[in-house]
Image (cartoon, rainbow, N blue to C red):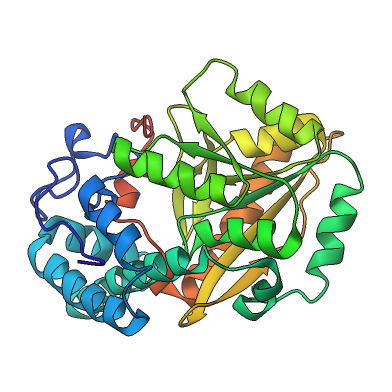
Length: 335
């Protein structure tokens, strides 16, 4: 089997779709869906590099249809999440979008794993970049000597960004990530990053995570972080699709304290084995502003960028739990 989604219910995520949200049903782990099951992810990792791409795609389509039919809680979560983007659509229409999203995610996993063998000279044929001056932009930002913080969301093929930075830009990269719930998945993901020459800093595995990030920035590295899920009270309020939400505060705080530019960037699949990169305008947090004001303004700019990309390609928004339930004040984030 190459790609499938585990149809077994996950108590924290796939609860009764009609039941109101309760604190015990909210996600507490970083990964909750079947593609992050160790056995399935391992099979996917091995299979996509041996099977022809069309065969992998066919298995992905079949597996995600089974998941869409059997994982009612996940399907309902996608419907509820997308209702904020399409408030006037019917439930049946949103359910069709949910199926498209599951299939899109599976295809993204396949194309990312297959792209790992990309050599530097092949990278320009794999990535189209919306900003023609992107290389000069990154080079000029690194010339400041303060490093760069790339932020993105659970949107598109964010893992493929590591291939872009290492194979196309040939710049040092450190990825800040939560430890995967499954140790097998965690090991494989670390091995993938190491194969690309990218470092990993795992959140909450030591007391000096912030210091490690600052060291990498001081070494003029690019540090990449997902910003759209918060850990505990490490959060900043934003408005997303007209609703209150929380984004992660740490990357913006690091930008404020170090002077590193914060660059929103989104990677979208445009065809079999091809991606489009959309780096946004760099954000330099103004040290003359009060810290919380500077962080809040930057966070909202990024939230607006996320909303723009999701509206353009909602099938790339990969939140497989009830996202809006986790934006309530009493929810203390993933751990």
